[in-house]
Length: 201
Image 1 (spheres, rainbow, N blue to C red):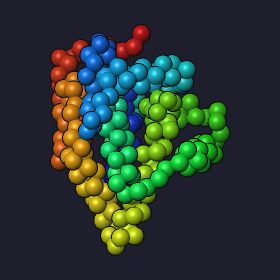
Image 2: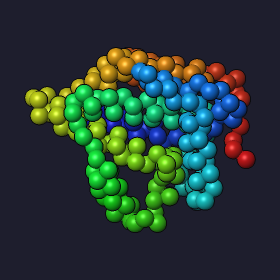
Image 3: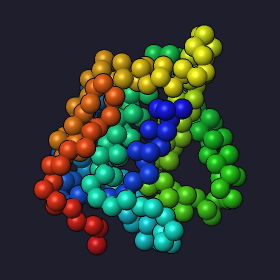
Image 4: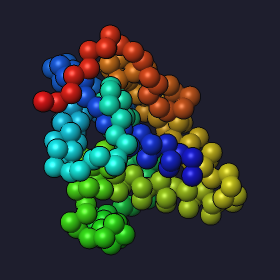
C-alpha cells in the first residue's frame, strides 16, 4: 500500500537539529498545536536508545530528517484520528494491545523490542500511536474496498482521503522541518539549517 509505505519510510530515519527545541512552534493540525519541544523529545529518545543497541548493521540516516519525519508522524497521526472519527472507526486499547502482542511474537519476544524500535527510528513512547496509525490505515483501506473500490486502487483512494482530510483540517509547519505540501500531505525537504546539524553528545 503506497500510503502505508510512505508512513513507514518516514519513520526509518534518524537525526537531530539541536537548538530547535527552544522554538515553541512545531506543527499545527486544525486547532491542535504540537510544540517543537514535543517533537524534539521523540528525537532525543530515539538517539538515546541507539546508544544501547548495536547499530553497526543498521542503515540509520544522519542529518535533519528525523525532525521532519517525526513532525510528519505527528501530522499523520492527527489526520488519521480525524478520519477515524468521521468514518466512525473505533480503535480500542485492547486493539492496540493485541497488535503489540502480535508484533512482539513476530520479532522474537519482548527482549527484541528495543532493537526493533531503534531499527525503525521509533521512540518507545510513540509505539502505541504508531500501532494506532497502522490499525486505522488498515481499517480505512478495508472500508474503501468494502465500498466497491478495487484493492489495486485502494492505496490511491486512501492517499486521497488523507490529503483531503489534511486540507480540510489545515496544516501549518514550522519552516525548520521543511515545507508543507498540501497536494501530497507530506513535508517536503527544505534546507533552512545552513548546515547547522549537531549530533546528540
